[in-house]
Length: 169
Image (cartoon, rainbow, N blue to C red):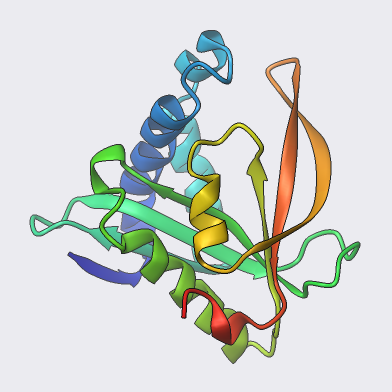
């Protein structure tokens, strides 16, 4: 397994992980029609526009296939104590539980630290079966908000780290 900074040619691989991980993680939570309407092409286009704008790392398997990614930057709302934010982290189901998510999260935290950020938060659906991952890295729930996905309301929880240097240590 190798983790590296994402490049433009990674857009399709990132999109595939993004869509496939949504379909496995949120199955039975988000409506099936929303999950089936996710598009690799649309996500790849979104990622092409975003690569290079924020910290973005990909994890590859031994064959060079992208199996996970994480991205982060400045906290987007200004409403919380955190100055940095883990925008997204996704791993294919078969890549979970191997420490890859922890490494990706720590790389985002390191990148944020190098940019002068000192704290970080991440928003997670309350029903996400992986939300304990953030708690295992020391994240503390500090806020809740509602988000609309496909016309349905879902609760999100903000997990916060007051010192990004201590994430997962």
